[in-house]
Amino acid sequence: MVDLKMWMYKRKSIQFKSQNSKTQKHNFSQKIAFLIDGRSDQNLKTVSAYIKKLQQKGKEVSLLFLTDHANPEQINFQAFNKKSFNWFYIPKAPVILDFVERNFDLLISFNVDNIPELSAIVDLSRARFKIGIVKENSDLFDLAINPVREDNWDDYIRTLERTMSQLCVETEYA
Image (cartoon, rainbow, N blue to C red):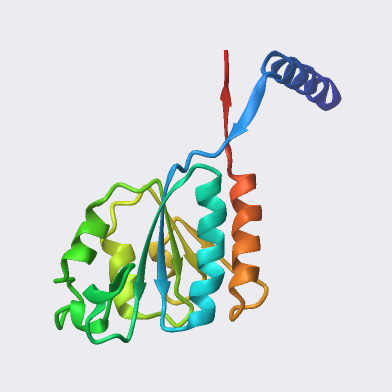
């Protein structure tokens, strides 16, 4: 009897798949935001190369990064420092307030050291889907990735790409 049930299930499953065979993978994320600890030049170079790759694919990409610069508003990119927050980690800088209010499809956090300011931005963000590294505050993320080597952003990006390709949404085109 169990074999008959399994046969019926597989038969229906095959019919269902053949009816929907004209589907293509579609990445739902058009507006992507990156939140980075930019105090390391190597981190910025790696992420900048990835951002250029995404922009060539037609994605709208925003970048906000933490810097040690005394006047982050004078930097060409959207940047902030630790003084951009009050004592309770509530942002007071306009660049951060604008960033958290924007409706991104995807927010990707590059925060290995568990910096409270970056965690506060992730928590306040209105992004639909938040991705970060498995750490103490991984409950802030919809998806927490555990790269093979924590100190290697190239590895994190490869793991992120593999995971996102598995999570792609399928849509049917007429």
